[in-house]
Image (tube, rainbow, N blue to C red; front, side, top):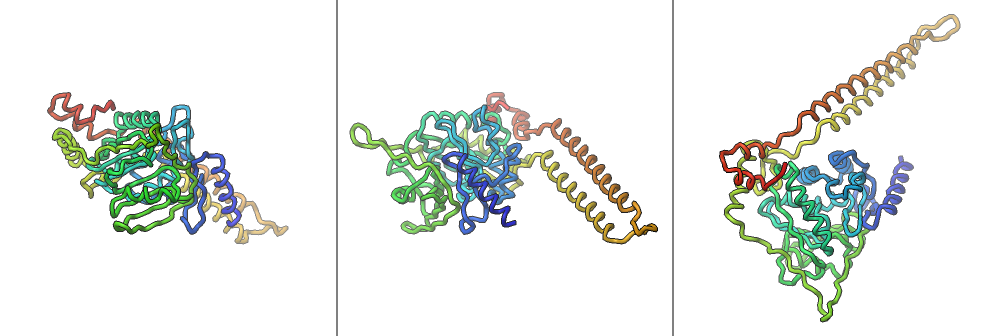
Length: 420
C-alpha cells in the first residue's frame, strides 16, 4: 500500500509538470487530506467527472455539486480541444484558460456561496466559474468579473449566451448573470464598493495581499493563490482576519499595471453594485419562480427562496453501469470464496488417494454461473440505457410557459428568448 501511494504521488507530479503553468502541485497531508494535480480520473462526460471529484472529496456540498453538474465544462473549450475537457488538468489556448476541475472545486467550496451575496472574480477568464457561481447567487445577487484581455471577455460572453439560450439547466435555477469588464484587477478604482466574496485566479504576492483584503466586506471571504498556497481569508472585523491554507498550487503571477504616457495607471471602474430592476424584469423573475414552485421544479438552490426540492438529477445509464460493475465484482468474489472453501474441505478419495473431479466441476459451474449473471446484467443495463435515451427529458418550466394564455412575445420574454 505504501508503495502504491508513493507511486501515485510521483505520477501526480509528472502530470503537474506536463499540464501547464496553472496546474496544481500535490500538497502534503497537513494541508488537505485530498491529493491534487491529476489525482482525479478523467471522466467520459461531465457527470462522471463530477462523480470522480465527489469520490475524491473535492466536491463536498450539494450546492456545489448541483452547480458543477448544471454546466458542461466542455462547452468552455474550443471545439478541437473538447476531448480534453473531462480530464483533471488545466487548459490554455492563447489567452483563453481554464484551471483544473479540482481547483475550481476547492474554490467553490471555500467561497461558501449563498443566495443574494455579491461576488467579484479577478481574472474571470472564460466565465466558467462566474456562471457556476451565478447559479447559486440567484437573481438578487451580484456577479462581477475583471479580465485583462478583451478577446477573452468576448469569448466569455459568447459562452454565457450559449448557456442561457441552449441549456435546460438555466430553467432549473434562479440565475445571477455575470457582468465582465476589461482591465487589470490591480487598478480597480478606490471608490468601488466591497464584496461578500472575492476570488483571484492569478498568483498573488505579499505586497498585494492588503489590496485584495480591502475588496472585502466585514464577514466576507477572499480565496486566492497566495505565495504558492490556495488561501482562504475571512474578514472577521474592520482590521481583523482569519487565514486558512487550503492546498499547494502553482499559478501564473498577476500581471502588474503599466504606466501610461502621462505616468498614471488606467483605473478600472466596476459595474454598478445594485442596479434598479425594472418592474417587468421583477415580474418575470416572480412568474418563473411561481411556475417552478407549483410544478415541483424548484430546486432549493440558486435563488432567494431556499428550502424546496432536491438538486439536478443525475443521468441514468452511467450510474447504472457503475452499480452493475460493483454487483458483478461481488458475484465474482462470492464465487471465488465458494471455490476456496470447497478446496479447503476434503472430498471423496479414489484408490490412489486422489480427489475426484467434483471440486473442479463445482469451480467450473461457479465461474460459468458468474459469467451468465454478468451477461444478463449487461443486457439489462443496455436495455435501460436505450429506454432512457429514447425518452428525452422534459423542460417542465418551458412547457408551462408555452401553455399560458399569453401573447407569444410575452411568452418569449418569460423564456429569455431561449432557442431550446
